[in-house]
Image 1 (cartoon, rainbow, N blue to C red):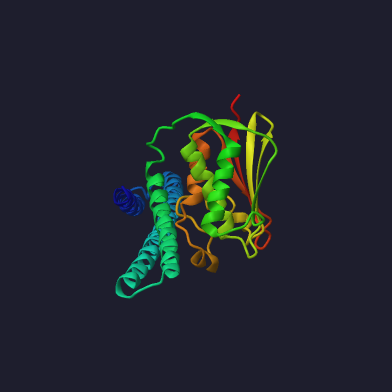
Image 2 (tube, rainbow, N blue to C red):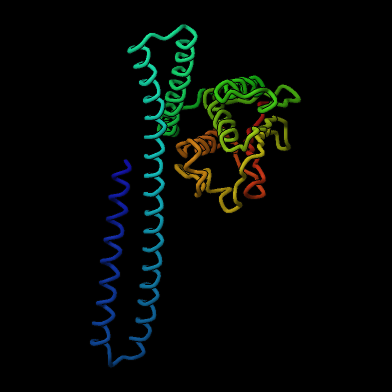
Amino acid sequence: MVVAGRQKSIAFFIALGAGLIAICVLLYVGWVLLNWRTGVLLFLGVILLAVLIAGVVLNTTFLVREIRRNEQQDAFINAVTHELKTPVASIRLYLETLQKRPVDDDKRQEFYRIMLQDSDRLLSTIEQILRTGRMGARRLNLARVDLGVLIDGCVQRTRSLHHLNPESLAFDQAESIDVLGDSEELEAAVLNLLDNAVKYSKPPVRVRVSAAPVPDGKVAIRVSDSGVGIPKPELKQIFKRFYRVPGPLATKVKGTGLGLFIVKSVAKRHGGRVWAESEGPGTGSTFVLQLPVMQ
């Protein structure tokens, strides 16, 4: 599908370039053929020149967009390769150690624990990629979902994955709130928000989660951190597929650039929306996932 899309883009650029060349030829030929009609030639020349300029601008715009898309896809491939290769290499190393030399029980249990964590990380990456691919085709399995229970489970899972204590990742819930949704997709959205907040937090990690009703029959899930923050021009860009904020931090923080895209897709499929709030680098950030409340 990606290859077909690139082929169509290339074909479009070739056709547009050929059209621009044809326009230039018409301008020169028209000057020869219509030289005796200066007024008509001037009128046609102005129109054709405007079309030519518009075509060049359009061609450049699409070309820049295609280059950026290719760069994002290359970055995604590199990130996925790293996310898949690292846990596999770690598991293999511990298995070879267990196979080649005797290990006491305590050390063996520690190896098992690390290998299980790496397996969870590997499965999480694979599931995220698969979820992105089937997001549009999969039908929602709608049911009543207790949002407090779902968020609390996600918080517990994130604490275990990142070895956090309750003070580092806390959930404040005022009341029980039910929504009509697909529990699997909603769980994936909340987990991605929590994982994103923890990964981009500066030590010590301080992430706060809340869920409360807001006007118009909706509930807002807020995930706030005191981490690196987000430049204002990037607040909307970060929800695009494969997109990661440029800079040295993007290479240090593990990820595929799909997490927030999944959150946005889930919100849209459930009739809600998601957005980010930040005053800029170093000020932390807050992500708000808004969903309709079940009446």
